[in-house]
Image 1 (cartoon, rainbow, N blue to C red):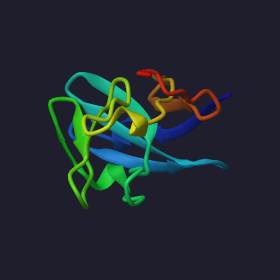
Image 2 (image 1 turned 90 degrees about the horizontal axis):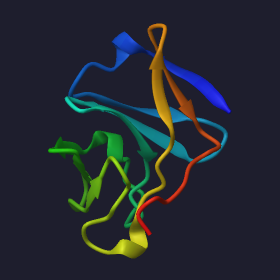
Image 3 (image 1 turned 135 degrees about the vertical axis):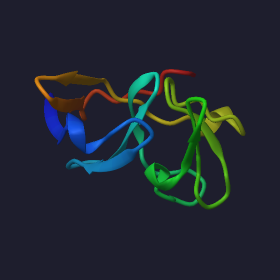
Image 4 (image 1 turned 180 degrees about the vertical axis):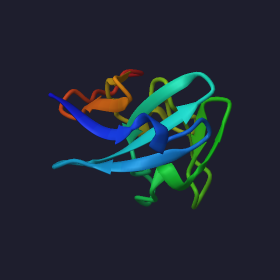
Length: 107
């Protein structure tokens, strides 16, 4: 089910936010390549990934620098820790996420 999570202007390029739905928190990232939505918790020690540095489509955990690709959730350290990714779109000045349709794409 699609949920309106932010106004488009609230997340400029290079910024990220955390959306807390009923389930797991979702990190919303806007890069020069577009919008991405992934599980916001690092599987290592539950750090909030939206607080991490993003370089070339990869978010680095702010605590221990584990690296995850935003497009597919791929964990560069260990594939067992790939993140769930969520459908995301931008319409009518708002960012929408399907918080119920998360999936691990890269396994």
